[in-house]
Length: 594
Image (tube, rainbow, N blue to C red; front, side, top):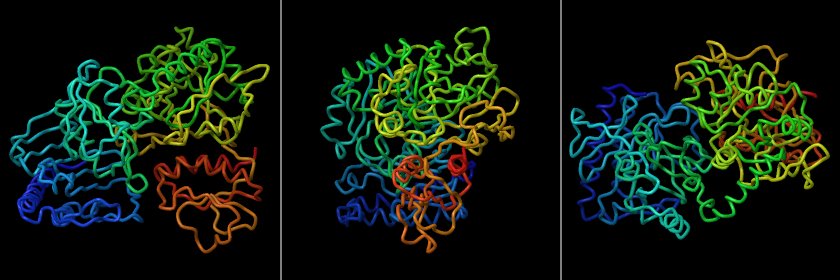
C-alpha cells in the first residue's frame, strides 16, 4: 500500500497534471492529435501529463514498475507482484471534442488486484481516491483535509441507474440495457463512471467493447473500497497484469445485499433468458434424479452430482474411474450454507470472507449434526467446501438448493477440462454407462483461470496449503495477514489434486527441459531458445511469459500436443513464483508415472 505522505504527494502531483491538462484544453491546439498503433488518438496533453507523472512517480517510488498508456508497447510484459498503472488522460476523445469528462488516473496493483486508485477531473478540480480501505472525494480542491468519505448505495433491482459512454455503445449493449429496464441511463466518458457508482450516483456500468487495464484500475480500486466491484463474465474480480494489459467484457456494480443477477454479468444469458432458464431447470431436475451434469466454473468444468445422494456420488466415481479414497469437493452457494455442513474456524472465516466466491476450497471438520454433511463428506471426518464465482454454477446451486459434489469433468488422472469439447474428448458423445449418465453439458465457453482451485486445510490454528492454485500463499498473507504452510504428508488424501500422478496426457511429459529431443512436441513458455529448433509441434503458453495466460492455456496446450503422435511433451522451465507454483505443481504431477 502507500503511506499518508505518499498520498499527499500524489494528490499534489495530480493537481500539477490537471493544470497542465487544462492549459492544453483551453488552447487552440486542443483538437490536434495523431493516431497510435491501436488507432486511438494521442494529443500533446497526453504526452506532457505523462512526462509529469513519470518524473514525479520515479522520485517517490524509485523501485516500482510504472506502466503508462503512453510508455507501453505491445512487447512489454510485467512480471512484478507490485506495479503502477497510469492513464495520463483518460477520455481523450472527450478532451478533443471539448467535453470536460476526462480524467487523470493513478493506480497501484498488488498480486493482480488494485489496492490504490486516484482519479482527478481537471475541469472541476475534483479528486477521488481510496485509502485505509475507504473511498474519499475532494470537491473543487486538492486539499486532503477536505476529503469526505463516499460509499456505493445498495442496488435495488427495480430502481437502478445504468451508466455508460456514447463513444462505446453498440447494438448488443443497447439491447442489453433495454432488457434489464433501468430507471435511467447516464452517459459520461472516462473513469468518472466508476467514481459515480462509488458515490451512489449510478449503480451499474456494463462494458462489452475493449478496454485497457489503465482505463479501469484506478476507478476499480476506488469502487471496491466504496462497497462495489468489477466482475468478469466468470464472476471473478477483474484482474490486472494480463497479456497486453487488455480487459475482456466486464460489469462494474455498486453494493448488493444479494449476489449480482447472472443476467448482469453474462449479457448473452439475458438475450436468451428463456432458453437459459430451461437449461438450468432441466439440469436441476436431472441432478435430483441422480444424473450427472457438467457445468462451468471459473477454474475448470465440473462433473456434478447432487450432494445428498449416495447413488449420485457413486456415479461420479464410476464415470471418472476415480479411486474411492480421493475426496470430492462440495460446491455450495454461500458461506451461510457452508457453515451448515462444515465446522468453521477463525482462519476459515477470514479466508472465506476475502476469497469467496472464487477459486479457493477450504477443508474443515465435518459437521456431524447434519445428515447432509455426513453424506456429502462420504462419512469422512473432514469435508472440502467451495463457493464458486461463475454465474452459471451459482444459478445451478441456487435452483437446486443442495450442495453439488463435483470433481473435474474428465477421466481420473487425465488432463482437466477447460471447455465443453474437452469433456466430449474424455467421455465420448454417448455420455452414459450402466452405472452413470451425464445428462447435460452446460457449455458457456472457456474457463477463465484454467487451473483447479487452491485447497487450504483450515481445521487447525494455521492454514495449510494442500493444493496450489490461483490464490497463492503470498496473496493470503497480504490480504488476510495469515501465514500459510505446505502439507508434507502425501500419504493421506485430504483433498483432490494430491495424488502423485495426476493431470496426465497419454504422451510422456518431461519438465524443466533445456534441449530439444527429436520427434517431441514442446509446451513452450516465452521465446524459444537456440536449443529448441525445428520442433515437430509447439504450443506456446505465453510468448510474453505471462503467468495468467500460461495458467489459462496449460490444459489446452497439453491436450493439443497429446493429439499428435509425439515421442515426448517437453516443457522448458517455468518460474516458481506466484501462479507459476501452481503451474509447476500440475506439470510435476503430469510428468510422474502412474
